[in-house]
Length: 171
Image (cartoon, rainbow, N blue to C red; front, side, top):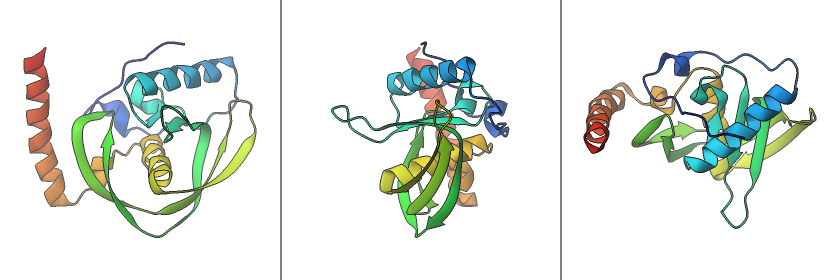
């Protein structure tokens, strides 16, 4: 397992659609393991393969605690059903230092394959529902900032430029 570099906005790979995984093999399982290690090292609660420059439909999510991790390794994930409305603050490992409230569904039913190739259906609400939606957005080439209003996007671009400048000063 190894920690991989996370791509940051505005890297063009983050706008590309990931391809379905046709065969779950050792290469995909290694990708999943590397993503888990990268997510925990960041630290974050989710990571999609495009965020490390790999255009495959693979995500990892852990909304548990350090004492009780709840790791989900999802290959070819999809949202089957969504209900309700949530407006929680989100951040992203690919947009470090920026947070904003995003409208999403409050509850989802997701389906995905495990690294063993088994199909799983899972209902989720709260942070886990948001995480599924957020990570699947990455697979479709969307960032959470794409869901912001025009005004908030304008504010984001200005604020994010300042964040990047501050990060450069610290180096």
